[in-house]
Image (cartoon, rainbow, N blue to C red; front, top):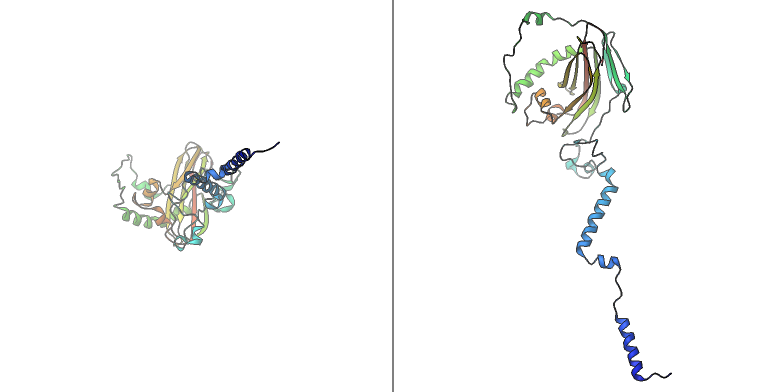
Length: 293
């Protein structure tokens, strides 16, 4: 078979056309030419890296550890990078069981461990006793009761007077604690700047006769000996299950501390570094039978 020059020219032209045709682009080659695609890929990579390093960046559960550091807080590792964040307090969580408390119980009052699913609770059994009658109270008591005044001070205009009254009453409070059925204390060291928030919570139940009166209170003792009354509950008879909550965002706590709505309880309670003592006091008066907390 002979090939004429004309046929040969056509074959060479077809071969040149095939050689000059562009090679099909791969997916990645097409994707990286689009700025929007590369931006989206960068965002995806950022989310992946955050998910991988989440235990280091923010080692807290978003559901069980709500409001640990108020609205904004720097990660703990920033304190090692910048002096601005040095000495800021990390999140300190204290789960206090029976073994973490120093217990001072009155005579015949029994304080023991109470097994729970999550932690070791505390059981306090107070024997039956008559209410102590003070001469001062009986001399001032009348047959009718009334309230002479009610003070509403949300802006702290009289907070200075309240603080003075609290300091004056600290000695009387210590005497009452000494006479309580049980006093539980936990000492801890705090060597950081003032925290943004602090909170405390626990659940309790009381099994008592109907005429019994049980008083529970929670105080914080500062390194210089000042006592801040954080929470108190007085129960008549029994209660199945209640939850005690102390939180710096709670206005009741600010009222109890004698500060205004705009003041920060942390600046008052954790104003200095040193050894603090959390004190839980339980007292009960019952003529009919023992009280179990």
